[in-house]
Length: 312
Image (cartoon, rainbow, N blue to C red):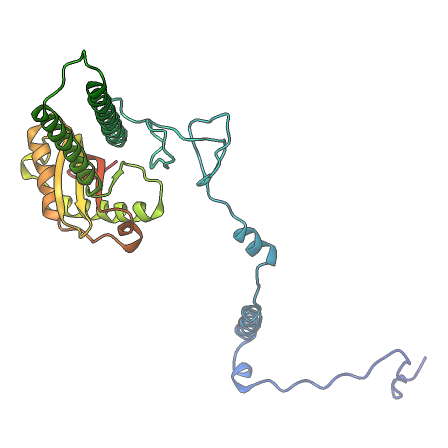
């Protein structure tokens, strides 16, 4: 054993002690628990600062999936045939629906009211036009037949000795009558051709150029109607009615009619007054003016129990 006066020689496995790092003065002045807490807070703040500098970006497939998103409309019916020109995507094929056969898009999935007459005005106008054209064709055919018969009779009267000969006054009277009928038919055709080109719009429209104009028109009437809601109806009367509004190409109001009454005279008169107060409306854009002179819009208007005017 080594003697106490001679210290043991260092082992080959021992390492020299590292020099102690100098400690800041404000830490040296603290006691041990406070100094440890301060060092822990400093290390935590440094780690949070490093984490805040890290930024994450979403993967590319999320943006691509968002770009491929589809707008799907839920319909409450379906048809066997696939529509030729679909307007939107849905869970089933639907080739038309509602109370009209025209290619229009419904605004609400709720079924139409059984008393609704929207869309019938267009069919009625087309039927009247077809009847007028057929009547004119019949008159022209009858006129030509009468002229041919009159010519044959005149020729036969000259060759046949047994038949009585018509006088010149009778022939002149027949010619004047034929000319008068022909002039009347020609005048009717001219008046028909000079009639303004009308477009009948129901609650649903088929082209964007008409849909955008009707939507702006609806918003204006709702805004004017809510600002001028009838005081006599507030909290007491509410109901729905169908209005037909005819607008000229320059935006002037031609006329407004109640196609289906709400059953309350106060509400019917208020609806007509609101439409008149909102006039004049915007002039037709060029896309509409090129083939339409008059717009006839038929919509359902509801005075709700919350004292608001709303279009269905």
